[in-house]
Each structure stands twice: as structure tokens, then as C-alpha cells.
Length: 406
Image (spheres, rainbow, N blue to C red):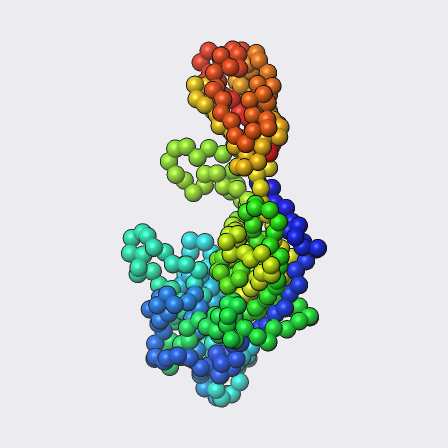
């Protein structure tokens, strides 16, 4: 597959952006929520699938003679999976998120508190929930506790539990509640031009773009962004998290073969890269004139690197054993050339095929060129009658590998 820049734009890689901050004043500075309890609630129960986001907010009153008071205090939160952002007295303290397949973690950061009332606001974020496996419905999500303030006096560790405090809860974010992504939202105003912030948490971005030319599929390249949601003309095209990179080690170094029992280490590629960077935008979402892209960025990213591209088939390849039929298709475009073809014992992967230790007597490239070039699709019987006998050992199963350019 080949990606091309949006040729409808004068500068395809440069969208003109406006922005506005997500309003978190009521939660991180005032602690206002929808309801209150004297316990920590599971996020699935509290949010009831209404949103990925749930605020947990409580306050604690301290005096300088409190046993926990010291110059070396921390906030310690036990979470279950997904992501946690912590704020104390309106100031961002830090974030934590679980590693793949590990749902429990501990967030602990040094915190500066003041005598009197201190507001602690925790934003818990889910990224989809398990829906299979033994007792999947019992897997906890959110701030499961304990939540503690920890003070250190010399070698003595003193903990003050906040789990049974009065907690306020707010479901969702203001921007999502107010549908800032919708073209019809009465709240979608006050967008700021210029001084585009980058690497800024909790920020909304907006840009307009022209419909890409032609009929090829359209993708949105979100390289450079952190984590969030994307909308095109009010249609949600999904969550994104390109800043979450796969492990550096463990990728397949040999030709991939999916046959046999499933194993999650089979055919592993793109180590050290994001799971997804390009997001499909259906052409049915795109208008002929002006289109609007809205991003909500949770972690902080650089929207200047975001752009639209079209995707077309650049080459097709196939591998078929003797006795079968190979079919090639450029999906609506003519086959322009045959890059590689060999009948016998060819080796390699797409883009780097090579002849093996034995081969047929006839020129496979010429045979396939005659049958396929200039056509949108073609089929060829893979046999010695078509490609000639091979000089491979009698026990060898002859294989045809073809790579065609579109």
C-alpha cells in the first residue's frame, strides 16, 4: 500500500489549526461533581459506560502538628489498569498508566500540601474493557484504593488513608459533555487562533481541510499526537494513542507464517513503533467543500505533524504451490509491471524476493507479463505445463511467487 499527500491542499502537510483548553476548573480547583459517597467506587459501576473518563475528588484538612506532616510527603494511589492523572490544589501532579496485560499499578508522587484544606482530584481513564475470559466482569477498573497520604520522619513511615473520605464523582469531560466535536454544538466557540500550543495536556484542536482528490481511501496520520479522540465532520473515527510504543524486542526476523496454533509471538512486527498511526476516514464522512477535523488531546502532542493522505495499492504479491491457481488484482487499477516471478524454490518477503536454488526452464516473468500486464486482475494455472519443468529435487513441492506493480 502506498500513501500519498492530500493533493487538494496547496500545502498538504500543513493544516491551519485553532485550539481551546479543556475546562477542568470545576474539578481540579473546586472539586465539584455529580454525586458523592464515602467510599471509592469501581469506574464501571460509577460511569456505567457513559464515558472513558471519571473524576474522583476529595479534600483533606491538615495542620502542621498532624502526625503525617513533613517536608517529604507523597500521594499514593492504587489503580486498576488504564490511566490516572492526578491534581492537587489545582496543580497537575503526574500521570500513571498500566503496561499491556498488567491491570494493577501504584501511582506515587511527592506532593506539597498546605495547612488547611487540600483538594485532591484524580482523573481515571479507561481504554476499552475486557469482554471475554473467566470472570472478566469482576475485573476492577479505576481508583480501587487504598488512596493514602504518606509522610516520612526519618526512617518512620506514616500513612493517612483517604479511601473512606467523602468522594465527589464527575462523569466525562466538559468538552465531551458539550460536544465540542459537533458542528452543531452551541458550545463549540471561543477557539483561539495563533500561538498553537504543543505537548499541552487536555487541549482541543480544530482544523479545516479539503476533500482529497480521487476515489482512493483516505487516512488521517496522527503521528506526533499523544492520546485522545478524533472526529471528522462530527463523526468519531476512534481513540488514538500513537505515543504508546510496542516493546523494542520480540519482532519476527524471518518470513512470517501464520499456519499452525495461534501464538501471540507469531508474526510480530513494528517493534518500538505505535500499534496504530493511520486512521481510516470513510469518504462518506467527507464533504465536497470544507471539512472539519477535531482532536481532543489528553496527554499532549504536536498537531503540526497531523495530515490527511490517500492510500492506493502499490504492489501485490502471491505465493502458490503447484496445482493451484494464482490470482492477482490491483483493486481497480491496471497491473503495470511484473517486478518478480519465479517457479521452483523462490525465497524472501514482499519487496525482497529472490530466486532459490532451483527454477523452471521457462521465463516466469515473461509468461505472467503476457497474461496480466494492462489488466486489473488475472488468473494463471500454476503447473509445469505453463512454466516448464524445474531442476528441483523430486521430493520438493514447486512454488510460484509473483510480485506485480500497480
